[in-house]
Image (tube, rainbow, N blue to C red; front, side):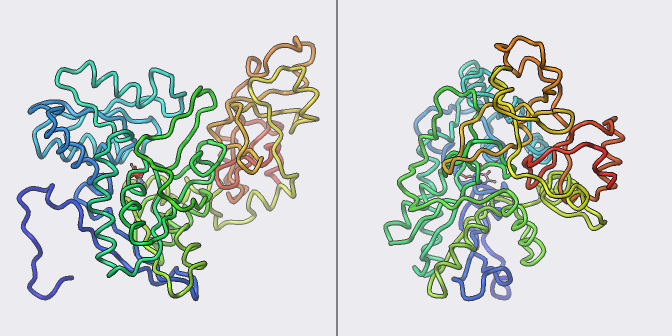
Amino acid sequence: MGADGDGGPVHGSVLDGIGATPLVRLNRIVPEGGAPVWVKTEWANPGGSVKDRAALAMVLDAEASGALAPGGTIVEGTSGNTGIGLAMVAAARGYRAVFVVPDRTTPEKLALLGAYGAEVVPTPGLVPREDPRHVQQLAARIAAETPDGWLADQYANPANPDVHERTTGPEIWAQTGGRITHLVAGAGTGGTVTGAGRHLRRHGVEIVAADPWTSRYGGGDGSPYYVEAVGHYLHPLTGADSWPAVYDTAVPDRTERVGDGESLRTVRRLAREEGLLVGGSAGLAVAAALRVSAAAGPDGLVVAVLPDSGRIYLSKYFDDAWLTTLGFLDAAEEPLVRDVIGPHEPGLRVAPATVTIGELHAEVGPGGPGGAVPVVLPRATDADGTATWSVPDVIGCVRLGELAGLPAADRVGVHAGPPPPTVGHGEAAATAAARLDDAGVDPQDPVLVLVDGRGVTQIERAALDG
Ligand SMILES: Cc1ncc(COP(=O)(O)O)c(C=O)c1O
């Protein structure tokens, strides 16, 4: 609260409330002997996220250049928050708004876009960049085909990083009285870390980009991850990978790679131990900031940018059933799946969909239960030479015995059946068994076991009976 009787400012429009967000000190989760960690509460923007800044800046810029005419239509491809920011700006300034969103976007975000009066066009999220249904491609086409349509294009629009260089960076410098030593921020378009980072670098601040473990930005294998709106996913069939033009990768001094499990468990700790209800990308940034704090020691001052609130992720990051079935959380009731299945060999044996049956027989060995081998999208390995198997990457399943006698030159993907059902390693074994039984899974059928959202081994359904 401000001083007694200080009611705060009166704004001419909701848009005047964008920016000047508070910093909050973390009190209970910072490591002993580490640097203080202060967080920039970007959910305090009126549209609920850091993207309000870029949305308003891009619209004002387009109005000034004439690219956006009075009564025109704002079009954007967005996983949600840029859309929410643009929808708010559109409503306040009298524009129509149309947003192309990936189909995995949370229902809460879609409902928010509709609440501001925007139109929403869902499209598959996990398709190659060249696919006409790809979010950016479809948005560009709709903008071109709509009279007075204007594509905001946050990935290439310089107004996006510029607003962070003019506002977010200087705010943090002023709020810390110039004592900040490290800035930690995730990168989606890269606008925040590029812009705020450019300003703070000039003052000698070390800039750390926080990145989901499998994101391409930090050298990951590009496979899907569960923290929304940051990092760079790569569909294996994308020909030429291109990174957003606005992300100046020379700005961060380094990248901290954080696994989904660490990010999501940090999200829960922020809510339960600090009273901060925030989204997955905030958990990612704080998880990285805690590492930076431990390394910097008490003389440092770490600031992490927390992009949005947890309210729009209640059906995911704060839903115990969602977390447990994906292997992020342990159930209270024992025994757990991992207690009854016993030890397993590390390294799940999989078949890339493009290998031939001949190659598969030579390479895979006996397979899992009943000779079952999950069929996955072919994926390059991580910078460290490993590849991990996320659920969306598992597109089918073959049984080695059933491939005998088929032409050795046939590709495995052609003969694949549906992907195996999954269980989280921390689910209660009885709950997982009942769930699979309800789904009609037979006792001898293969089941993929997930740790932190990724397949680690296969079991027979019957193994859950202990
Ligand atoms: C929740 C959330 N976190 C982080 C980001 C990344 O911000 P930037 O695009 O500035 O890199 C976004 C962008 O949409 C977001 O919505």
